[in-house]
Image (tube, rainbow over the protein chains, first blue to last red):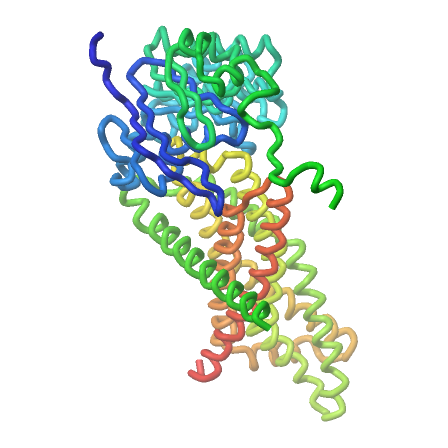
Length: 266
Length: 265
């Protein structure tokens, strides 16, 4: 097997928020051109992993490398150069409320390029067509539904033609058809334009549609990395329980520490 | 007892942290304000003008009423005492000096802290909890350059302007009472006003309002950008930013007045 180029690498990352240890030793590699899905239960630190990759937060210990460069050693300007090469789709779309759809999408172009206003308009139209929302340029984010906001957010994430796209829960809270549309968009983008994608999600249907590789996170650690087949035929009970969505198993749904009977009869 | 000391200690530590953080925000703001343009990363002119309209033009009505009634009230409150001394004409001087040195800048500052400071904290707070601030960062757009600098500039430019406006309106309020109620001759009232009023009085007021503008912008942005915890968090940030701005404005007023007082400016 040929050696694939590593684009992002997390090495033994630890992160604590307040007194809660979120990540305890996460090591993960992302290769060029692949779609990596990071899965895990709610609150297991998936989004935190993503935010380390985008440089939004820095690890307490351990390091994050992007194309071989340690993000912690870069100054703001260098970090910004990296940021121009990737797009992020946030859970809620994170559109700017005070700007119209068009202004939202063209914001990175206006700020980072010296393109003519006509060309910017054309590019915005192209990206909106890609997400199926051409003709919605003049609406405000408040007038859009949740799914539409995410699609506009996606158009904004890809407007600079990034090398890497990060997706934070792209299908959460959407109906199955819109989820399917978003999945197809992610697939199209990664296959046709060979963009590297990192998808954080707990929607296993979507994962099996889009991912080349899957990494499962549990209690701040990566417990398995593998292909879709590895995950379907896994022997690891934690992974099996998650993939099949079984309520009983090693991942405990009940988070309270005290004994139930004790607490009731106290 | 131990608990009380612990609580006091933790409050002191938190306050110190806030002071350090706000100072850092101030330094960053100044950096982007003056160094940004040389790196071709100046704040957007359009954003600055939008904020200036919001801070300045749209506050004119509330500032007008606050200043007018303050002028009227000072004249009414002081007229009986001054007329018993037989110097009712001094109302003109008293109103003009107290408005320009103290009440114009401070009341305008407090009104704008309530109107604009709260709006800044609420807007940036909402942007923070809906990931918009992080989205800006991820697009390599610095939130301080984009959000803080325009608001800071708008406030330090427009608050002195509003203060000059409030000075004029406040003096006019005193004039209304002086001329129509105390029956002072109109020309004499105006003449007395300018005899008492010095450039120094107006300038110290403007210096104060300049500082107040910076305080309102920084505190609003600071609490806005440090919001967490959804809608409730936005509400908390808004409240605490107004309370903090009010306290700091009065504190700064006291310090600045002391400086002017002891250095005979």
